[in-house]
Image (cartoon, rainbow, N blue to C red; front, top):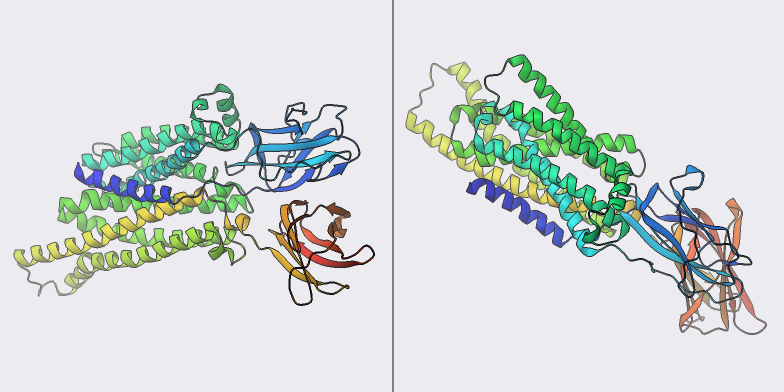
Length: 571
């Protein structure tokens, strides 16, 4: 029993290491427009508030709330998607709202199952604007729920890998189905995958609603989860795992059954297994963003290759190599070597496609957390390919080339039992070392992949701020910075400098923004002085992508005003 416990401890250790370095889960759906706009000043109160996101969202366990400057709720409740557009959420407001400052807070769940929350404010009448930057009314994600959800995802992936060892038993080492330890490892993988699916259904409600573990069994949150794509996918996964359990119980052990029935069950197992893999892509990044169908197929192929390869490594390390069953190793190792080579090829191709899909532009590969994790994963994959090649060469020298050589000169081959045993021992030592190292690195790759699942893709988290210098007619310059220069909320900073490049205090700095291509604006933007010659706003809403015209007006005296314009590309 020490060997399987050692392998499971290795997997758990690498996964725990990934947990220690994991960032909080982040979604990649972002707000692209609000109605009313952020920091808008309205003559009359609107009838409703609407928020538009870059991708589809659900709000079953979330909220959209509006309060006045005293904190009293002024919305009517009852969220809806205007025009059945799942990228929008809307809530009605009570009639006859007085002039005041109003704060809108929201929390929804993106297509990749991660919650999104935030807040903004607007004013009715001439009252002051109450800042709402970063404010979330109703709470954020509970850290305990977030950590539990992250561990659940990792347990799910680890279970999938162990369950993938079934392919090794069916294709490479049929006799291994009679080995109790091998069967226990496969069933352990099944149990981990099933338990993680149940926990995923229970935890998604509190995770999306921002509540604690005490709401895990809340009927309303469970109903909300089951009404989403994520909840339905996990239910499908549980059903498929139940079918898979029946098939696995028929295949393990495989002796004493008609060959036709055995072959039929193996085919059904492969089909059901692919269905299980598809549910992983349906609850992750593959379900959101561009080319979802191709991304789902690529993700399923990627997971299939990983589970077959690493699951085979586990059974090879724990069960077959220590058994010293020479004849069985001679048959199983060459088969697995060829399968592993094909699996690595699939992993490289699908991984490259996924990296191209999620990492844009190229600079995001080394400037975002997702890109840096991906670079670490790529480095580990390259290392494991190099180590795997050593294993392949060892197997080839021992089981492939000697056989071919013996067929041609078998009359001259003379080998004593002692020589064969010595050669076998040397081969096993080399193979145990290379396969053990291969499995260790594979466990690290699994940990990195688990962290990537809960990290916002680089194409969403990459920040490429705009920065430009404007020449002022009254002398000096104004430096304009817009961060992240993406549709939605932005921070705008204006630095006024004299001719020598030193900060310069002026009477007033104002800013307007317009998008002529869509006849938006000009919208007045309020800037706050934050230092000598420094003016800033952290609540600038640029609701649509395109080339925005930002006009800066610098008043140096009662009569002197310098006007400069910058064309700012917004993604």
